[in-house]
Amino acid sequence: MQLLAYPRETAGLDGIWQAIPDQYEIYKNYFEDFAGEDVTVPKIYEPDSSRGSDRPTDFNITDGRSVRIPASWGEELPEFRHFEGWVWYATQFDRSLGADDGRTFLRFGAVNYRAEVWLNGERVGTHEGGFTPFSFEVTDLLEAGRNDLVVLADNNRYEDGIPNEATDWFNFGGINRSVELVNVPDTFVRNFKVETTLSDGHVDIDVTAWIDGDPDGTVTVEIPALSVATDLAADGGSRFHDQVSLADSDVDLWHPAEPTLYTVRVRHGDDTISDQVGFREVTIDGSDVVVNGERVWLRGVSLHEEADGKGRALDSEAVRERFDWLNELGCNYARLAHYPHTEEMARLADEEGILLWEEVPAYWDIDFGDEGVRELYRQQLRELVQRDWNRASVVLWSIANETDHTDATRNEVLPEMAEYVRDLDSTRLVTAACFVDERADGLVLDDPLSAHLDVAGINEYYGWYYGDATDMEQFQEQSDGTPIVVSEMGAGAKWGNHGSEDDRWTEEYQARIYREQIDAIADNDQIAGLSPWILFDFRAPFRQNEYQRGYNRKGIIDQHGRKKQAFDLLRRFYRSGEVPQS
Ligand code: GCB
Image 1 (tube, rainbow, N blue to C red):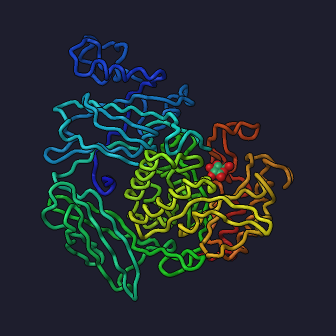
Image 2: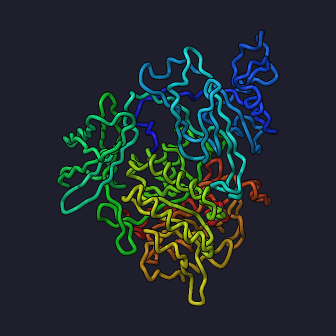
Image 3: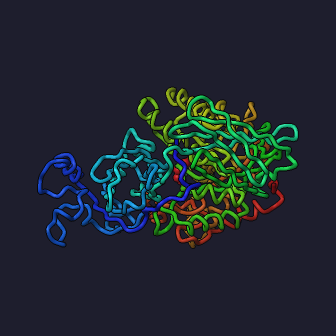
């Protein structure tokens, strides 16, 4: 069960750390050969005591290069911009940052791609998956005075990884999100989940809490602004649950147009955590997406997580900038592709009233036949869902992007994953980005997975990789009526490159594709929303033609924030009467 950190005060370990890029993957030998033995060779986790002077030794992690944490190492060490492999990180902190009595956990927001962690020379654990949080208990490893933390970040690409070796994005390695110590009492609230359903004039709020430690005693939930204070019932083990039913006239539901949040507090013994939570229900009705009983047409755009000069380590300023663009466009929705973005995105989306599609990186050619890969897949789904299940903004869990729908194994595994997500969280919609197929009588979604999805995403590039943008007029409604979101469409354009509407890579060409696609999409009743590819140009190593030079140019803004013509076209569409403005 994911340990919640945001609703707590934590001791941050961010700041300047030391780092050693280990191109030949050699440093680990020092651990294996020398750890615990009485030798004079400095162990890389050892502080400077063995040195005998203030000069660096040959191999001592604390003599590494100074880098900021969190950061992508390519931004901190420009000569390692394209390095994929191992980087050793180290920092030191004082014992006083850990709990006096009670327990201390080390929590990482995300390390791309694999992390191995040691505290004071003891191996604490490992984690695979570059975009989700993980934590280790370190209570018994803390030492008086100085504590030495070492982290190996490995961003090699693996055939049995998720994602695997091929992606259309840059593999920003490093400790990309914050590292913190979380101090808790011996028994504490590890996580809680708030689920809202609406029924006959009532708002039913289900609260489940998980207690770590000795679960004896009472778990209380309070929503002060609604005068709710209730004890949850024990489910036998560490899980407590109850439902609070309120008259709907008493509750201001969360909605994109009015994103009301309430303080929800969960208490057990000495431990109290509290979070800002919105109450809302998301469902489907025929081919519509419905929030609190009202149809909402998803006016969105897709985003990668990256910022010029910051790599994948977005700070609050970069997060804010993204919402300013979304608001300027008139969006009520955003697709956070193709992996979990920083938790702050969902927190700000809660405040701003932007509905979110969140996704795990089951992208292109995943080896679904391998049980190890399937377990990693479940783990990544679980870590994302348990991190963000209290975010009202999150309405769609996307389980995959452009996986091969002619592959029988994939067709067995993906429906299982859809069910796995529903078991974790039954109050959101499950989706995936699928391909469009061409038939003699038109364009169709012909993917057996769609029967297992609440909403089907389609990625289509009519007018760019194939056909004409106007071909989308032939997209046929599904016989089963599943709501469709156009999760991608677009065209490449280099900012400032002008020419005729028929000249590829010009802003005019891209704008024409948007215009024609939008005309077709707005006319199709079954389409419930749109998130074109993509808000801004992003690093893509295999795109190297003269317009690309290492960037995917399908952004409607370039990597420096300069808007292309298609930005304005999309803005006018979203702000016009052509789409419902709810
Ligand atoms: C897609 C992928 C996306 C690519 C995009 C493109 O279908 O989902 O990751 O970047 O196409 O530009 O080709």
